[in-house]
Figure 1 (cartoon, one colour):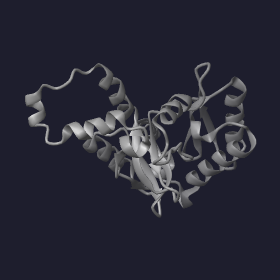
Figure 2: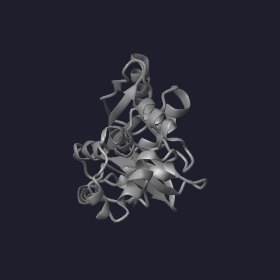
Figure 3: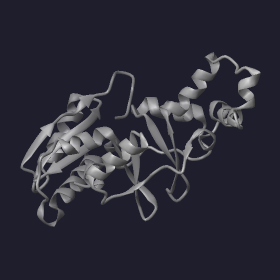
Figure 4: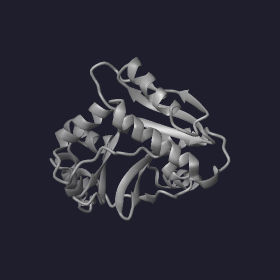
Length: 227
């Protein structure tokens, strides 16, 4: 299996000028832990994570460094200040993040996440963002035992399910992750209601080539939206 088989498409993103307060609201609204920062051409410039935002909270409680520690900070104070006081995505993001292609094998993605100590990696096509692979995406992919499907049918099935859900059910596909192995479909993510949960399952069942649907969709906590 490759990145394209498990990635979350239609990624929630922000621009370099997005306000920190806006980013925090997006993370809460969509139930995600990070957002890529992209330019007008969807080129990935950086990532803002919960950890980047937590620096602002920590700054309110940390004591000031003693004068002799500042002597050895090597400019660290300036960097920390921007990270903890910046108001825009470009000021607090982790720049130049690692990216992968759609054909990156899952075992290599797992190694990259472990080596870099990161939780997610953007997927790009011709330099443009097309998805994101998180640790949970990988675990779901590894949980599926499969042989490669002839002609890439599994990927075509996955794309067809996401298109059907997006165009006809009213469910936001950025909340979903669909895994397909030998025609067997696993549905993951969060929806707003039992009706939406059923609609996604019916959409999957109606796609040609689907032999089985395992519905693992959960429900968003009341008052929140997103996956």
